[in-house]
Structure formats: structure tokens, C-alpha cells
Length: 79
Image 1 (cartoon, helix red, strand yellow):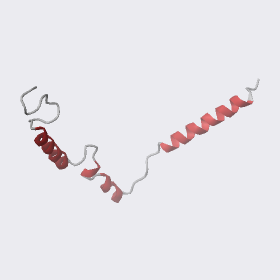
Image 2 (spheres, helix red, strand yellow):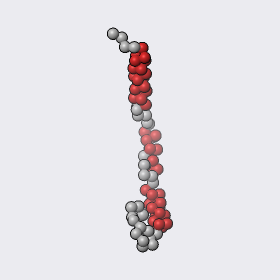
Image 3 (tube, rainbow, N blue to C red):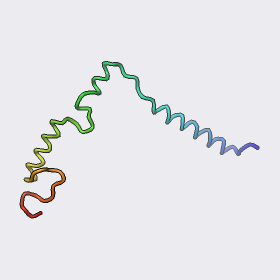
Image 4 (tube, rainbow, N blue to C red):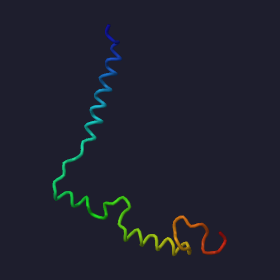
């Protein structure tokens, strides 16, 4: 018993799409001299630690509060 034509076409499309998705998951081949570019501090998700510290200093100076992130209230004493 053969399935209808549209089911065969749908099955072929699903298999082709799955093949394309799996082909996109292949990791690129990097040469050793290219890996050093990926190991730079700028490539970190959090960014440059020195820049992060500077941004935190600016934030706490503007808010006039100590601690910066996660601290309730401002420098006015009105919690």
C-alpha cells in the first residue's frame, strides 16, 4: 500500500530540511593562527573586564550609591 503523493513529498521535504539543519551544525576547521583571534579578551561574552569595571564605576557615580547592581534605593536615603 503506497502512501498518497503529498505525504511522500512532505516526507522528502522533511528529510531534506533535516539534512540541511544537521549540515549547518558542523564546526568550522580553524588553523592554529586563527585560534589566537578567538582567544582574545575582547571575544569574551562579558567583554573586557577592565571596561566592565569602568562601566560599573560610572554607574555607581551616576546613581550616587555604593554597590551598583542589585542595591535598593539611591543616595538620597529614601529606600
